[in-house]
Length: 329
Ligand SMILES: Cc1ncc(COP(=O)(O)O)c(C=O)c1O
Picture 1: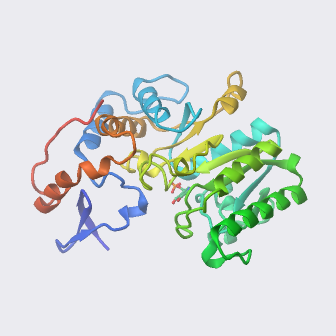
Picture 2: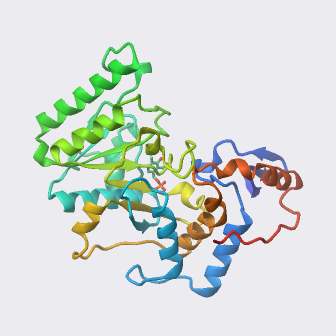
Picture 3: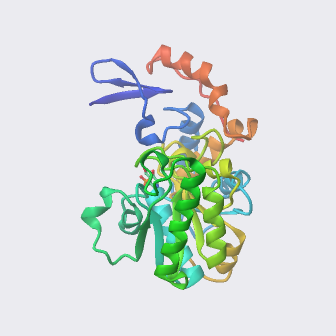
């Protein structure tokens, strides 16, 4: 399908039909298309400074990191920016491996974590198969999913208990000292929307603590308000050691992702060089995106406030002159 324009929740095809964008493209345009504040922030930053190496400090990048860290749960106080979600997952795994000195990574079947080398191997669903040579150090397990229970469970409590027992047993058979990280989508997305039953995420946290395994919550799809809180893991009152994000952080107007890092893992890299980073324009869009709207409502529910504005713009179509308001904080 040809798309010639987009605004708010709508796209316009090559024949001028206005269509509701039910999928938000790749489930990433959390604030809708062409938000004038974000577009303006990108324009301003491009005019000022298009690119700078990750080693340099920059105000737009630092401000974006501060605003994100204010909203991530617990001690996830540092932010390492990347250029997308898979990139963030790659870095989170690399950090976990360096932090623990271990190599293996566990993740669930029925999951998606991105299309780059390690991220696609961590992915549990068949998108992994063409790229899986069995040598990536990834071991998969069954997560909870009562509808198609692997554990013959009849209710959520049984599903939680049996799924956790399965994970614990797998860790003991694999060798706890060989496992760097467990990677889990807080609420799985593209492999099926499978909200973890009560107690499951807390149980995974407890297992990670018991064996010294890093808990990586993948919030690339579920983060930034998608589930009604800033991050889906906040529904379960659990703080992971690392949290990956992308998509909704700036609605994908410019590629941006990242890893929010807990204090313990940040300490590992306090004296140790760690390579990588993101493009500056992405951070500037994240910063503006996070500005005024995000200060208004600290529960990740800001989209509701803007609906009338978006409806007004959608009715008018993309040709109408837009308000060039700044959304910067
Ligand atoms: C949970 C999750 N992790 C990682 C990714 C990969 O993100 P990206 O497409 O930005 O590389 C996705 C993409 O859909 C995702 O849903």
